[in-house]
Length: 449
Image 1: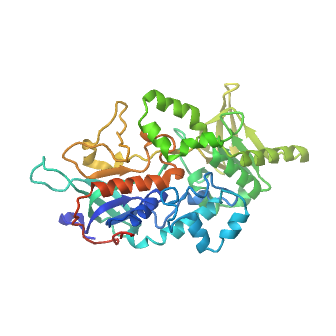
Image 2 (image 1 turned 120 degrees about the vertical axis):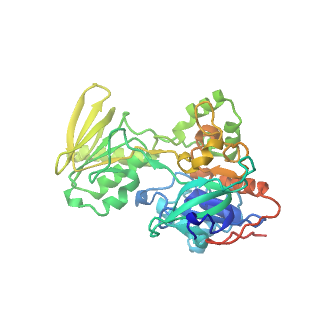
Image 3 (image 1 turned 180 degrees about the horizontal axis):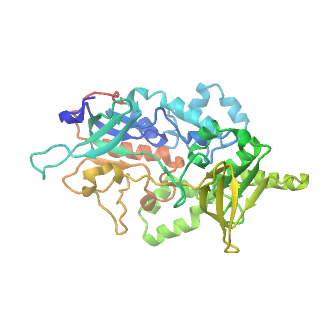
């Protein structure tokens, strides 16, 4: 690609996707299976496709059924379905014999890599989009039907290249969240980096470890550390009495149906608040019952044996950590006694969740054309397109950060196939009947009859 300093672009595309995780992979599949040819390029800052790679713990299972894959709910006959993957891997019969709707996360990650292998010629890895900007125009009021995307590739010496896009789909993923005032270091980790760092640490030196958080990731890390470090004491620090079970009944699961997006997006603010209040326990700060029972049983077995290695420090919050040489001092505030206590550990893992994607960091001078609501959040149309004002006519789509407009399930994996299809349909409907996109860089997506 040519440097943007030349004022020229390396290529022009109908769609440029920023990020290539499950969301934009599902979009690529939807475009591939669309009847109309669409040119597209994707840029991903990681060196390979990775989906929570450092939380692929051996016993961790998916929390969504296998049919909520990249394609099935949009196109049950897709060659990119999880069933097609199982057939290709010659495991379909054995998977069915398990009588379990939920694969392990490791298997689902393998499925994602299998699907991604059909699109490697359309993705540039190790490439980070740094800004979107308007093309040069003689008349500032002239309609803008494409934008420039500035991209920096790893190993380019900092050089920035540019592509033009009629539509941009931003899906750069979640941002790990740490408690205010606490920074990561060699003994203070976020769960998003867990396996990578655990694989290189000195396990023999881990005699006392702590895990902070009350959600699925926290519980899974506690179980993993307890099982992997048989001589270590494991402290689970929770703001509640214990882990809350994830609501997984058939009626509650209807909040993840595609039709629920319509209910939320078209509902009043009162309706949206009620949906959040009644159904946030389907996904936020909750744990599968199988993991909860496993941990309770381990703690009970410790009591029976007289060797209590697993301790739950409940009704408590971590207010500080301090490096004291060979260990870390953790300050815990009890919500029950309103007293603080300190103890030392060799490792503390914060499974404290993620912040939503913030597209404003990329929008640059396009941000001025994007509408915001009274709370300062972006107005997002039903097709996941940012509401923009003239003269900006090109589409700016987001996959993530839409919970305020599309509901708690809008950016989850359970809706990824339908969402990708809706964005693909919107893009195709908005394209001019004849496009002048030219190839340059990743290959164009072709239509499938």
